[in-house]
Image: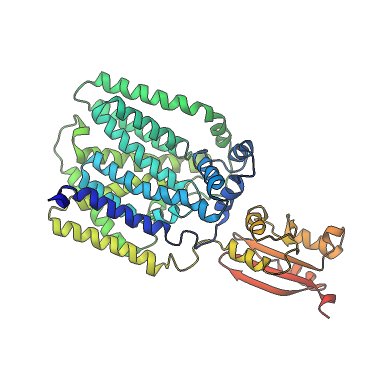
Length: 485
């Protein structure tokens, strides 16, 4: 009897424990990659807070919540790669709880449990839960803000307004793409207000005051937002017209065998929505229509704004930025499964879907057993294992590699600049700094090896005595030929 009474809570607890294991297992197994090394250098506890905020304004344009959390974590628990990933892992578990709350507010606890389970096993969520960046914070606070939004819309209570305000402020200070979420919420508010059956005046003013408070708290960050909006060229490429399909594949880790389940769930969901004959009034009391308003507005509006701005202003579309649509997409998939009337068939579909997701992540992709990111740590260990005073040429990622070089007590200088020009300086021995018997050339993040002409020129005086190739990184140790005779 007690188990039946607390079945929902126990099921949610099991789902969250699974999420905990899948996010903390081998948390630091993969090396920090380029963007994570940005986090390490910018949230370095040896820097001043002013320096951190300068980085967020000039070089790595992001709101501060995640970086403040990282800085505090480093100060309290140590400046390590494991500590860097603890907060995202906790936020990944938070995503599972937030998706449960969102599903429960839209329909009931059963939808919430299915949405939470899908999120718990999601490859995309696991990946970004083990990355020391702010994207998983964006997912968590997007889901939480929407959950509080719908709860507030139904009750119009002051306590629910406070939770909505707090979650939305945290959302805005987590990532700039949160602005898409706020715009979607404004669109949904207009729809709900137009369909409001009760006190429309109270509904309007309750949300107006809440949004005014949110806006007021965001005013101090507007200079940073203005600086970011001045960016008119970026490394991201213009989006292809099939971006929505490409992103869907990335969201499921290219597990193509999940597509039939997803398509079937979305078809069932849409058929049930369009079969509804309920009037356009008080949508917030009609779970299926309410969820469709949320799903449709969130996905279509977010993608449309991103696509138009990418074409007309500056490209801004990659899958991890589109994480803002995942709460809506996962709710649609979960709702399609939830609408299957036969309980045995419904939970069989959910179970098979989760098993395939887990099997693909663990065994097909080898997520926990093979390198998933650029192997900065391993290549730096290779460089630093002997002769720790040898200079290192690193054209593209010298600033990033500096974290691992310091960690591994490598004392050699980092020579930054175009590697071909640095090789010319070494061959000419123009200054004592470039009069070298040994030096490393390291490349990462797509940085190519020396071209053939420059390599042949270098071979007249130096020879490669040690080299390694790893995942998107490489290193070569050169020694003066006269030393090898």
